[in-house]
Amino acid sequence: MRLKLVPEKTSFDFFSRWKLWLGVSCVLMLVGFVSFAIQGLNFGIDFRGGTTIRTEATTEIDVGQYRAAIAPLELGDVSITEVFDPQFAADQHVAMVRIQAQADGEALSSDVIAAVQSALDTVAPGIKFVSVESVGPKVSGELVKTAVLAVLLAIGAVLVYIWLRFEWQFAVGAVVALVHDVILTIGIFSELQIKFDLAIIAALLTIVGYSLNDTVVVFDRVRENLRRYKKKPLSEVLNISINETLSRTMMTSVTTLLALISLYILGGDVIRGFVFAMICGVVFGTYSSVFVASTILLWLGVKRDWSKPSTPTGNQFANVDA
Image (cartoon, rainbow, N blue to C red; front, side):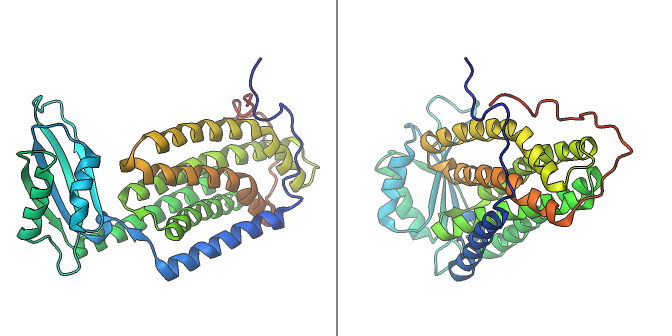
């Protein structure tokens, strides 16, 4: 007996309340914009600048103890990660301690660095600071611009690809869905003031790819059904296509979420922000593929190409049991 997340054949009407779904999306995007305008993002060290200290000790590294030792110094955002290398000796334990830029200067003063070393020495006797490097606000500002450019170029590349692969109406629908997913994810990070660093940018680019994959599967089935059901209205063809790919969509999303939730609970603080962004992206991406991208396509309409056969291409695995 196989577990099925959805029945083999469904006949949901996804467009009976399309105004409600789009209204919810618009409200959430507006809330995200307002939150971003009022309080902005809680940028991490990558975007605000700071000091990176490479430490080396003979005792095993306990990130929690390191963080607890530095906390009384009240240095703001502190990130601690352990460095692994097969070439390290058995008693060589290396960590990267990253401390945000202070209000009175770009880099930590020698007195503050000495205080940090003294604090860490209480939990790792004999700890050494192998290197101390600082990143100023100018470099951080360039990282912000580069990150924004990376996301915009990714979305632009998607627009061109879908335009060439399908038609311009499909491209517009896919890009609107991608922008919807990115804005909602950024809005949640702004509203909850979760630390926003380069790992979150990587998550946003991954979200773009994941959401695009879902959307292309639906659109590919729509194109096939437009050739198969030549006299049915577009809304009915869209409903048929989404129902036919619903099993595959749910299976992909649920299995991905199971892995992400496990990582969020057990993965630790280092990757928690990245995983949280991915969880939001999977949920929003699945929603937008069904309700946003398809609704935009319904609005714009699409020219039916009856000259090509209706043989399935690339969608033979869309009906997997879920």
